[in-house]
Image 1 (cartoon, rainbow, N blue to C red):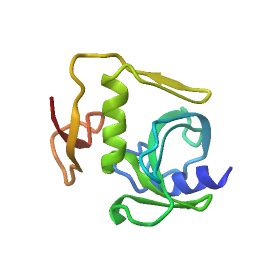
Image 2 (cartoon, helix red, strand yellow):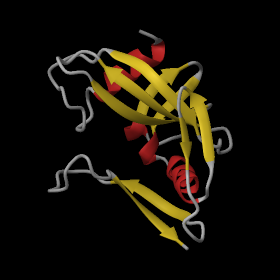
Image 3 (cartoon, one colour):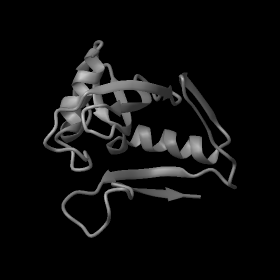
Image 4 (tube, rainbow, N blue to C red):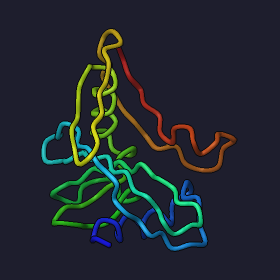
Length: 151
C-alpha cells in the first residue's frame, strides 16, 4: 500500500457511502486523471479497487490537493506528499472543474484514465456548491452535493 491508498482507505471507511463497513479497506489504485488546476489546488479523480470484501469493489474518489490547509475541515482526508487532501465534491474548485469538463468539450489525461466532455450549449458557471448532510430518502448512488449554476 502507498501513503495515498492507506490515507484514503482510513478516510473512506468513515464515509456513509462505503459499502463494507465492517472490513478494513485494502485499496489498489487503478487509475486517475487530473482536471485543470485551480490556483494552487490540484484536482485529481482516483479510481481505487477495494480487494478486502469477497467481491472487490471499485470506488471513484475525487480529491482536491492543496498546499495549505484552508479547505472545509469536515471534508479533510489527510496529508500526503506535502499536500492537504480534501473530498472533491465538497470543494467548489472541483465542482467547477467537473462542470467545465462535462459541458465544454474538455479532455483530462492521467494515469491509465482520461475523461472527455461534450459541448452541450452555453457553458455553465458554478456560483456555489454544498454537500448535503443528514439522512434522506435519496439513495447513496445519487449526488451527495448540489450545485447552483447559471447559464
